Image 1 (tube, one colour):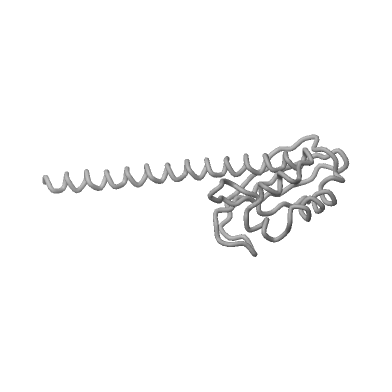
Image 2 (tube, one colour):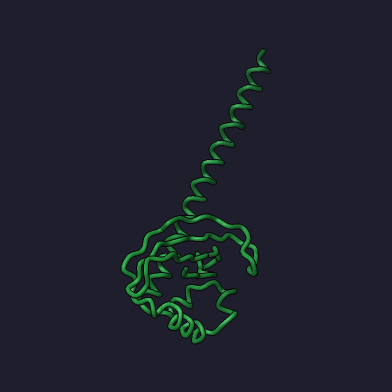
Length: 144
């Protein structure tokens, strides 16, 4: 009888420990996703301000190695500047992604925004960020 009680207590202990670690990982996941969203929003604010040089510095190391800062600035001036200033931006959603084609394995988060620009109808912007030693960094950006 006593061994049955001990077994039950051990079983409950294991179950409670598993539940606690599960909720911690969920909380960590949520915190990571919030940090990723904040990083994406910060990067978009740099684009809104026309501070393309600083935005380049916030890109992932792997991404920056594929082009120079001046190439990035020219690309943003041609691709983003014509839309004018952002009038409003809201987060539609975000989700973690494990694999991103053409990029190394890592912890990625895709963040989608609904954005209204001065010279463009409301549209969607997607920013994909990767967690690196220096924090969340941008690896991809699209305007739809």
